[in-house]
Length: 213
Ligand SMILES: [Zn+2]
Image 1 (cartoon, rainbow, N blue to C red):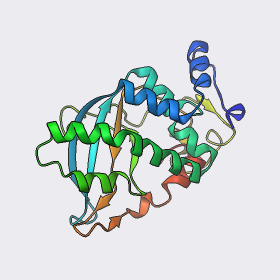
Image 2: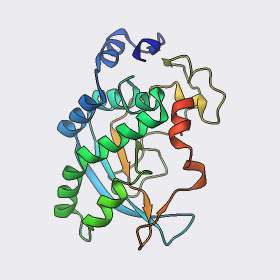
Image 3: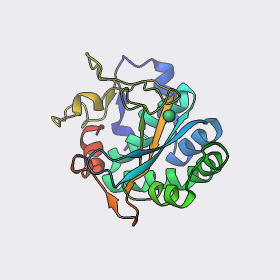
Image 4: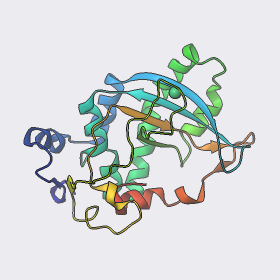
């Protein structure tokens, strides 16, 4: 798949070389693990139904780690590019491997942290990782970094995202440089039922088709 994936000249050659040399999603997880500072933990109520809530962690990583995670063919969006199923598998692996670190941080630093709820939500099928969108922040520490750019310069060229006509496709082929990653658990209620907002039910397919959701 990686041979279909290249970058436009808007991405410097040194950066392209680094991004294309990332060899596996496991190595991306390892980088995040080594590199991350955990910023905060929140429980966020669901706008659609307030009986559901989700745990949200925000972490900060180096710009290159973020770049490898978000913009490399072996990274997070890259895994969904391969197939929606492979993306979901990598998503699960990411949460399984980072959960112990997130949990032990929260036990020490987040009063009222419920280990069982957080574990269940972070390993549920709709748990997801994403960049820190502006206006989605829950405290000063997790202040957003990304907002809709006015001009979307094509940076990732993989034969699909830059030609897609999907609703979010104009963002898919950009390769933003940031340093915060948000980890969202699934929305769960007191019984442990999972709620997936209708606009997010096709997330894996949207990431596959458009590179964005
Ligand atoms: Zn926060």
